[in-house]
Amino acid sequence: QVQLVESGGGLVQAGGSLRLSCAASGSIFSTDAMGWYRQAPGKQRELVARITSGGSTNYADSVKGRFTISRDNAKNTVDLQMNSLKPEDTAVYYCNIDVRNQYRRSNVYWGQGTQVTVSS
Image (tube, rainbow, N blue to C red; front, side, top):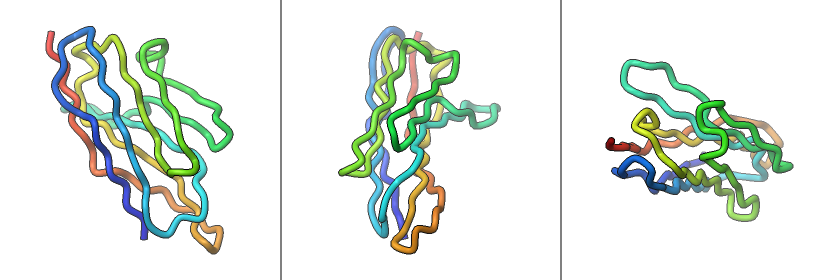
């Protein structure tokens, strides 16, 4: 079993910064892709940023140049540094990690979600 624990959400004024962190624990042999998604009220969940095990990244157009995703393979963590936040960034943010167990089987796990609210 694998657990993902997120931290770092909160309330911030427009133009401010927040850093989200997600730590995976449990039966982990290795991790593949890691990502952050968000879901605003009344909208579908969308990809914010993703990073492969080799460090390649991709971002939603709406956050390019403002958000940075990073990972620590030794600690099984993924972070999202969010700068120049806008009210439209308000959403529940979820981390997503592709985990391989000792049998090399892959499963995708989700965090519980952390609220980010940006006031104007």
